[in-house]
Amino acid sequence: MNLAHDDDLIAVATELAARLRHGDTHTVAAAAVDRQGRIHSGVNVYHFTGGPCAELVVLGAAAAAQADALVTMVAVGNGGRGVISPCGRCRQVLLDLHPDIHVIVPGAQGPQSVPIASLLPYAYLQAEQMPEVVLAGVLVCRSEAEAAIVRAHLPRHIELTHAEAGCLEFSVVPGASALEWLVTERFVNEDAFRAHQERVATSEWGRATAGIERRYEVTGLSTTA
Image (cartoon, rainbow, N blue to C red):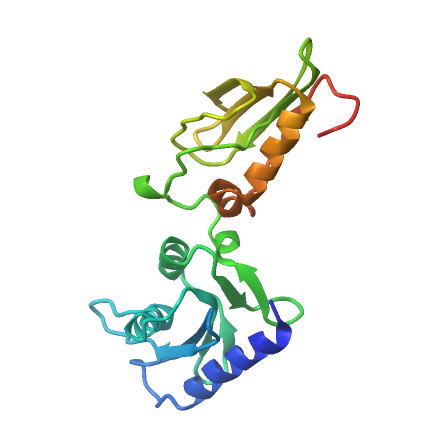
């Protein structure tokens, strides 16, 4: 993310937070920028029955303005508290509604912009959000006679279907825990494997899980794929 762009967004939220009257009803201001460069802002509404956080108010304001997808969001507390991190509920909502958004959070060296997925590891996924095709584990052979297996441990439960040209084998078995699955694939040759890697990098699954750590075990190759 562009630092100047982030600073401008922080300034908008900070100015709005500074205008909040003393009291417990409105204590946090938030601002977000959409793909068209328009900034949308709002404040929280605290109530004992449960009121919306500032981030959720911004989502409503952006929707009312018929905004494009939101790119970056930040929340600032009143009373000079500065940038604050979103609560767990807001993290889940942002991940569900704007999975590509970045959120500005406090960091050791000052505010930093991070992908929403990094703020909610092992997130809950609704059934309709689960990818139809999973291409995480890869398996390549240097010739039709010699195969090399690469196993990828996936830290979430997923529904799996698979169909890909050049793939000789595809299997999924539970790993050491409910959050870990072992995906094994084997391809007819290295060209098919490389093409598979390119598809993964640009696929919805690849983008959605870019922040997830994968551990690979490689056999049968002189170098790690």
